[in-house]
Image 1 (cartoon, rainbow, N blue to C red):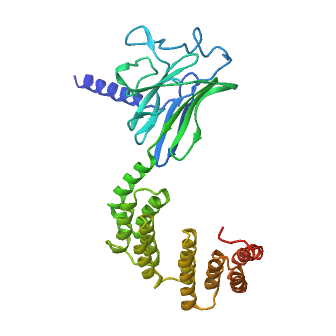
Image 2: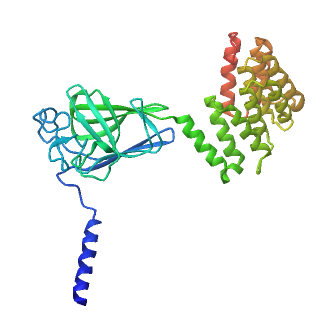
Length: 370
């Protein structure tokens, strides 16, 4: 009896071991994985790649390898009621890290098997929650999460091995295509990038990262650049100064002033900058003054440049700023005077070259701030 138990145990262990073997794919269908991110949302496709293998013209359509519609044999119904597996061997699987839209329709974050019901002028893409099956032979419609219709595109050049590819990539969407033989099937994936990023930032700023001013400023800068979530960005800007681990520096105060500017609260922005300028370098005076010029506040910019001169005297950072200030007010004579001083004081070849270019423009009567 003990020998019998031992034999059973050995068989069980052996069977379990075989289940874990990583063997090459059969029928010369290599496995592939592609992945890209839209914003911070990862999109990954895992699939196997059948080849054309001298079957060009015999891949698509009724009577060929991939017949139209739901015509693949089903191991459940014993009828030809399944779609094409959109690859080879096991399920073609696609994973979305966050919720997305496929061809304008919502699909929850998760992993799905991808199937296709092909047609001459239309392809139905099916995202199904069963992901561990072999091909589409065990496909069941009741597990569909989404179906969308897309238009296949004819290709001039044959693609020997089936492939998926990100053929277009924009800030908030991408276009993925399946390509095989002389056919391309594209579908658009849209991502709510801003709200996904904001949700991630909120989570991170409640962690230990929220005690680091530089990371808080990065979160606010995202909001400023996108011109979104400005009220919360103001709260974060204050936290970078007054919160645990906060620091009152020119950079954090300038960031707070920017938050006020974005909300069109200019008196508070100017008051914050008056405090920041008490600890500003000459170059920081100049950078702030130039930002005021871009805001069409040339008079306020001149106040800043003159305050820098009063504090730091005759030096490159000061003259560099006054050059911009006088130019913004179309006083090219005084702008040239300070440009020539800045040229003589330039701390590097790069700075000197930049001032040289500005001098050329000023002599032509052109505003260097344009």
